[in-house]
Image 1 (cartoon, rainbow, N blue to C red):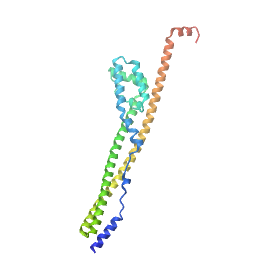
Image 2: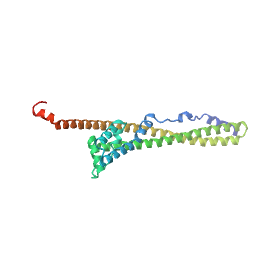
Image 3: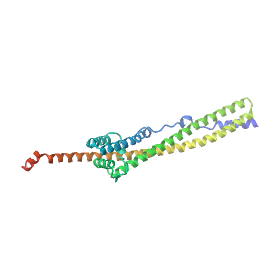
Image 4: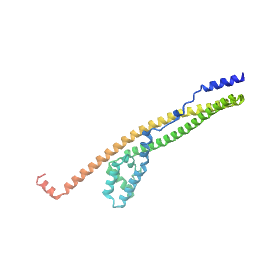
Length: 256
């Protein structure tokens, strides 16, 4: 009777199907992990460049050349305008650096609201990417544990069968009971994997939405900077024309 019970237990456990190892594998979305993360890393470089150029201009010897370099840098690189526009919140100071920075913002045609929006979405995107990385790492750790438990359960089952072959019924029973405990733990880990996968998917969606918002702000800033540059160029042309004595003489004579 005891042997029949053990054989029956093996038959029941053999019918239990553990998720295949390949279903536990996870690969992060290339759209999020490779596209967004490098963008976030560029934010400090742009901020440092703006601050450095402002200090150089405040010290003298920079002038229009620095302003043009800043404008070109903002328009050139990916997300350059978005993160380069974040130059800090202190615009009321009277020192030379703050005045130079304020002049740069005026020259570029950027408002404080635009800068705040750029900074806000940049920080949100960075935090989202950090959270996504942590959840991905947690998922991968649980998947490795699940694969290990799956292998342990299979090994215990083989030991139970070998014990039955050798007529070691008590050993077979112990192996089967241990396999049950491992299987229960495996179920728990797999449930955690499902939850973690849902969290990853949600955070990827959030990151994609932040990416869309960042692109919208970038376009807005680039258009604003471009329009401001165009106005500055036109104003400069009018100023040169008005100051040209020959052109002024022709205008006085009624000749355009």
